Image 1 (cartoon, rainbow, N blue to C red):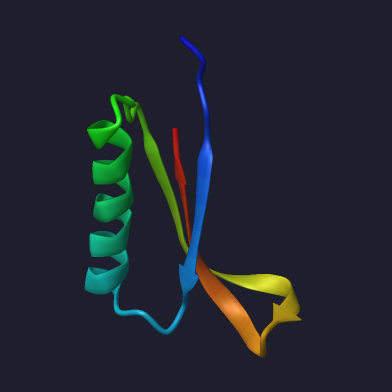
Image 2 (tube, rainbow, N blue to C red):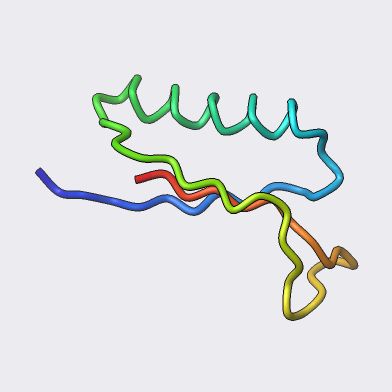
Length: 64
């Protein structure tokens, strides 16, 4: 079986509860299509090196 890693980047303006719900929704899509989530690595809110669409920070999560 092939192993994949998915990087999810959400707006830093989201509440912690809303970002957690979004990550759970992504995990639901993966399992719906017979994927297996082995690990979720949350980096939380971090600053970017360069501005993207006027936003400096983002919430990062990596799903393995």
